[in-house]
Image (cartoon, rainbow, N blue to C red; front, side, top):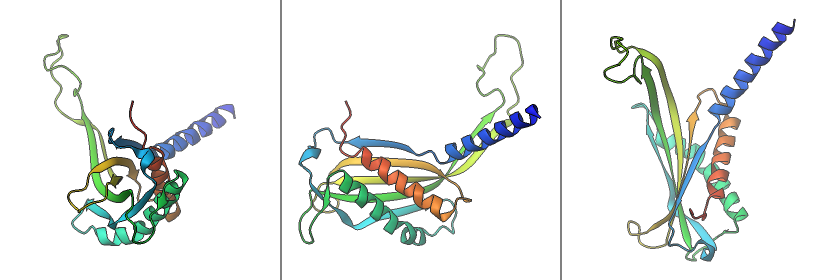
Length: 198
């Protein structure tokens, strides 16, 4: 009986760990050290707000994905910017910063072969291993890139902050789970907005 409980608990913990790993969002941000973020008070979305790029299959439809996620990204980023004390610029006014996002959906692959980490000439006399794949992982990866740009002519504007949130995309996720992932990515990105590296 005790052994059965131990097995059930171990399996449950393993599944929880797998779910948490799948939901993990890696975030990094690169601010311009010469820009004074404290002076920025207002912001606005770029004319097009964002772009979606997909590099999985020839049948990918970036326009359909953008139609679904654009309102979510805008809503969650705006809410987080307000929490940071930055307000949307009034209609017709020039904002201190423009925001533009990019969503990138790609395939990522990692693999390991037998003997991969051995030196070219092993000193202990074993013959080299014939390359044989021992581990292969192919996943769909999603990235949300958020740029803060200074106002100006398109093409001449300077990016003063870039945040990138990356995570594995799981096709079995529910719509609610995907929306929560976008909200979490936006919240985590904006948390690093304007923080300069030391």
